Image (cartoon, rainbow, N blue to C red; front, side):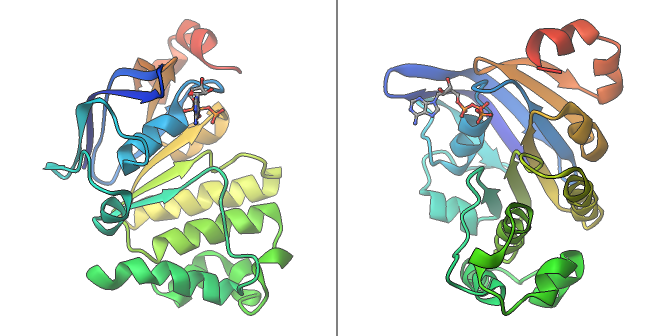
Length: 233
Ligand code: ATP
């Protein structure tokens, strides 16, 4: 589904991603793990072409999307939920979702507002409330729901568990598992190994923009030295 082939990404002169290669298969949930500053967000931005890799390629279902404008990448089927999770605070929940629908013009919509309210009942109950009345966790859910309105085939979630209270985190994990059950492919970045293990099929560990591990969580458990070297646990 997604293939990143030997990308090198920079901010100015700072070389952040070093010949980074990784792939995500259709229907898979993959967790990109690494400490603060390891390059997880930069990897997601490089997929979206918000950061342009100086070398290397990014392919979606075999099609080379390297160098495309980000809006075109989004239209082509990659939904990106950044860490900042911007929502429109002066618009209602329903209006926020309608904004997300704009980019779905080009494809048959897989998600309707009602389906999303079934998945996120809190949002459904308060559909006419403004974004600014939502808690942090609810904003997180709304930004994901809005991205789904764009009908992505691949969803990029930057630290979905960050800042969530334990109960909300559990709901977030269930939600991601439901996406998977619906056939959505997900690449998420995480610092929370426990959360990642619940939702993901495979772990990718990066440090200083280099891949250090690619395998199952069972395999990772057999190599605590890898975990200890590259993750804060
Ligand atoms: P976090 O969990 O903190 O978001 P991360 O793994 O997502 O960490 P990145 O945000 O990709 O890491 O950052 C990778 C490196 O790039 C860090 O050293 C960071 O300081 C640097 N960096 C990030 N954004 C910029 C920028 N706009 N300009 C310069 N350097 C940046």
